[in-house]
Image (cartoon, rainbow over all chains, first blue to last red; front, side):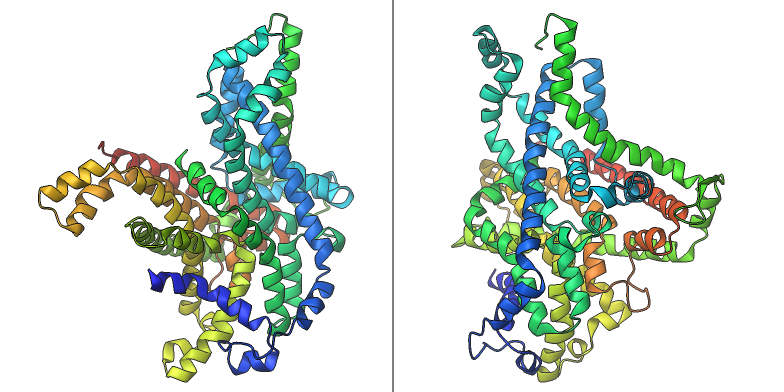
Length: 263
Length: 294
């Protein structure tokens, strides 16, 4: 166990100790503890990566996409369960079947349609990206919600309808709050995916001011090839937000992944 | 079923609840997927020039593209290696952290951490290890294998990719296995202990057969992820040395966007899709049949 633990955490240890060292110290011995805690290269990296803007971009894209995925998928799943018409059942079957489609087999037409034909990549890249994330994320999210909503007793909703709530009020006031635990699971899995995604945004975001963290990291790595005294702090800064979030919400995250996998 | 009385009201609710998802799903998945088939039948000399019908010429070029099949074969080897190692190590870790040792929650949390990091950044972290740190250890301790730059050697670079993949996914699979292990009924294990089964027999004869549902999920996930691998491949080796570690996704990206050959690139992507669909379909079908009841 201890061996496994060391193997799994050692890369993090290397990142932390080396982020305070100069190139000379890193080349001499990557395993040594730094002599002084020198934060100067962190500020250099923050400036060179335009870190605050990049962080804001990633944050905005991820939160907007995930919130919209949650609300829209919950609404869809709820309606599909409660109105299981032929049409809705077919739609659900198509959604589930689409999960097998690998991103690689639709990315070329995607870029061709929205880039070359409609030119959205030039005019509205961020909106396009968020719309695509909702589209890609909906299949899995509707699927998970669908399984959970089936277990909610129908009487609850009927009672609220009899009490004079409309269909929409019933959903937002009664059903959506009951879905909270499932929403946490779905939110976590989607955040991890979108926050770290590289291929799709690298094809869609072409302007520097829109870059997300993985793309910025790629550019930074290209510019400062083998300049470890800058690269290591950059890597550390890139993974820091998600590590902090993990430390705070680790119980929910582990449980969320477990729930997501069982279904 | 809740049914509204008037058709207009029902239509309104259908649109309100399912409309946005339907539209975005169609825009993001269905239209490109269908259009992809159309693209493979077209010839495009440059990204701006109009498409011309060319029949199955793109598929023919894809089938005759040796680089594509090289990358496919490499991907298949990579899929095989990662399925075995990720699942064996993931299961071993899960077995360890549910066996009642101290601070198991802490270990779970720590072992899952690599999974939070995207493949791209992960690749860069390990680049530092393979380029800078391991040769250093090799130098000091006189271990020849470590002293070589792994990423510069065809075979070692392949195994470097496998190692990084294990590091990334074993923790995730561990979580899924933990969920499975917790649900293995205690009394069955106790009964087999009373009947005289030792630890190894209990694991192989009792626990593992009951864990097949978990393996269906983890093998499916490793299979799919391994066929689709791009980020780690791109960040760690960029296909090098001399394209020897270029997996099929990277080849498709290169074909389509760098060589600007959308038709052939898409034909290869469709071939990849068919292979993945068939392989995962067979895997789920056959492993479902292996499931047993407790």
